[in-house]
Image (cartoon, rainbow, N blue to C red; front, side):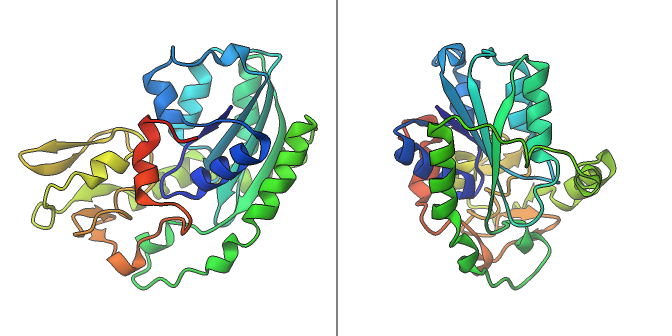
Length: 261
């Protein structure tokens, strides 16, 4: 099984391709979190964890899930972090979480892709889609390693820079910059943001989108809203600056609660 968390498609794309390469199933974390009895993870021979890097760390939903879900020490765990720059201590932290549950992250790799955070502070964005050129090679490399159950801790070690990026101070600054809000005048109540949110942090009130208190800062909503109704750091992202992995259809992201094999 491959468990993934994805906001704008990078991690979903990797998980989907990896699942196809090794004949496994890619399951969205939100589905497992909502239906914990739908899968018995303790019986899984191998579990892959694919996630984006936020503030040099794992997303909060990923951390919370693996701190509580029932796992087996005999399962082969591996992780793939997707990021636009530094992966910080994300894989190291994931390994620490698993070790606290009596398990271990035996293998970790990083897929360097396009950061969806650029448009949250830059008005005009020109995405370099060539950054995605190495994705397929990375998937093939991980697939070979996983099928052989290789052990490689080289990317699960902590670093000084990684510790700085994932520190509470840096996280608090980042969270302030990525605060999501709703422009009531621009919002038309289409509900796309609610369907795309992988954390159920959005709802509809009086015909307008409303933000909850458990945002994962994935930026899925602001990159999806067609009317500029979702804002980050007080401004909307122009439609031409919105990002979604070019090989991922919007409908696929809506299917996170269903079958995405």
